[in-house]
Length: 108
Image 1: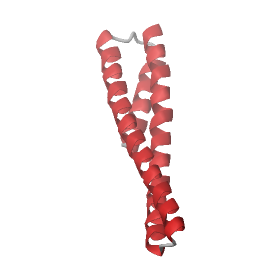
Image 2 (image 1 turned 60 degrees about the vertical axis):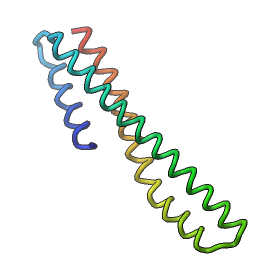
Image 3 (image 1 turned 120 degrees about the vertical axis):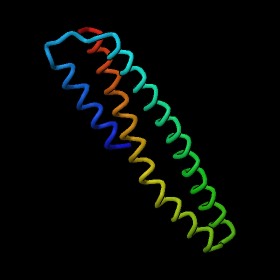
């Protein structure tokens, strides 16, 4: 997904920087891409919140019951949580760039 969104943004930037007029089909295609990446962003937000919530719950129950197994699961979830945060950050920022690109496409 990372490679796909970064390549698409580069491709769209090249189209924006050209002196040619932008077609309505290209603008509609861009809107479809925005929708797809928004959906991906929403799914990753839900998963990130779910994993973070589970990690906190396992931490609390692990501390309250003094069960080392629950704490190990908590640290495992935190290990997963960091890549989810980084991927969500990538999606969020690049969808914001796509909004800016859409405005540029409309202006042309």
